[in-house]
Image (cartoon, rainbow, N blue to C red):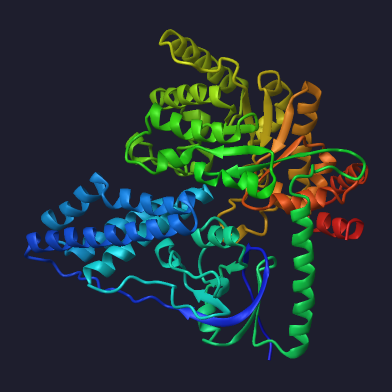
Length: 571
């Protein structure tokens, strides 16, 4: 009999297989005080060596099978394992607090992961899994237990798990696995990215899924819709086979459009770009047929270290991206840190409401040494490609003028030092505050381009924290108020003759595409592997019809009515 489960659509595709439940061993934690700190330290050192050897073997395996970009995560784990501050703090817990090695490792890395999970940036939030993976491996080593692996998964398997770490998935045999279902995880989690990279469907976020499925049960998995059917009957299997055939046809159509423009039926072309969180994501451009990078988040450099990244470290990262793209667009968002992304080494104050606080461009004046290093690195990297910079959290003209003055000052300084830089670098802004929308005509006089950050703009327009599950139903990017705000910004950009795009999640939402086309955006920047689906949708639409649809939508009461209109006009 059919049992249906619903979760988060994390990786598209359709698959049938048998449930294989993966539950790793749980190592013991010794919470009692230890009276032999030297023995605990020796055990910790031994565990470090054991885990490092394990991570090195995983690095070499993944490097040989998948390449440098996929293997890089294990290099990152080794760096964290040998991080001086990590070692000193864990050793201090054993020496000064009489912690056992297992307790010191658990509590330190629990706190590190918890700090990362408080961040608003989804990419950075998911990096908490790296701390948890390292913790898991160290605790296994301290208990002399084998490292967990998915290498034993049988053929035609759909893996069910609470969550999966990079170390656990590294020994996966993709030929045996048909898909993933996780109780935890998110769109930017390691498993979601892995599934999308190797073309396997995945559904996540079903909190009690391990209690609802048994090993060996027949499973139908729809990663595009986030749907799972357990023990399907014959009629359901037939319907699913038809759906799988339709999905295969759609994927073939996407592939055929890889190098085609996103042009509507009446000739309006929209440029499609990719959002990335680090240089290791650059392959998304070629993989998805996008035209460059519309949002390069620079926070990874600031969140992955115990001190502010040097100018040289930033230069090398930005240069790598610029050289990879050549003449193709690369928009680097200046660090959006502070507020909900506090950094311990910069001594941010506690804030009651970080979303409305000291973050983005608002911190640059006081954090001049950090800001100037990033500006210098960007100016130098811009010599190697079409790198542009974008200012986050703008709410007034003075903020743009401040950045322009600093850019001019650093251009002069670099030239005086004899270092190559691009003095004509383009400077754009994020439109993500209501203030920026309302004074968009004034801002357009001083910006080379606009890009709408729909995630923050939506929550600020509706006054609904997108991370608060109690009011998640209020957070709706198709609310007429949000659409009106976006249209105001587009009109201001058009009047000023500057480019405007979208770089928030809305850019990849297929149901939003007709409205974005109707508004007249020049470009959309899309996360993950969403570009082909958006391109396919744009090529089905008439810009004229989209403009008419938008005008009707702007007169409606709420997002529900907007969706009803959409389904009536464009089923």
